Image (cartoon, rainbow, N blue to C red; front, side):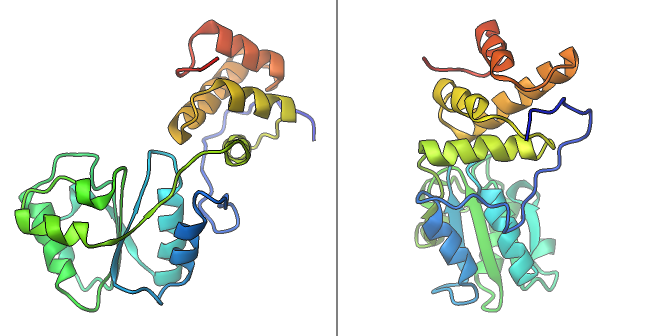
Length: 225
């Protein structure tokens, strides 16, 4: 399919199992999520950098388990007492911990019928805590990493971000981004969003020339030679 002009629609990333990009760097985490409820313990964790696929995996598990989802910063004892049987707690190390958050987590850990999936950027043993007793519990979690980039996954990630914007791009565009943008999920996502805005503003298609111009302008995220 040829390049298409960018349309001014909101971007709604797809977080279905069908749109998840499976690769060697995340296959263990994906397999673990899909084997639920055959988990060795009810609280488990996923960790990796922003944009690595933790939210996507958590969404897949939430569909399987009927889990509710909440950012760690909004966790409170009242939520822990709300008859929850499955819960995704996201971004455990994005904000400073609070006593209320940690008290809620300890309460959930102590309830044998509750399934928990926690996510963060670093391994759980490195997540900050406000209640010291929680640290040893986090360190003991089964924890799956979800990122170690290679060209195949980065290329698929570029295409997915454009597909979320109803765009199909050429192999040249994909390779230009993979070989010139910082090799992190967050940088790829930010670059695609910026190129999308440039194309929209100039009423142009996403072409290799447009990508080169965006790279040369210095307006995009950090790039590499």
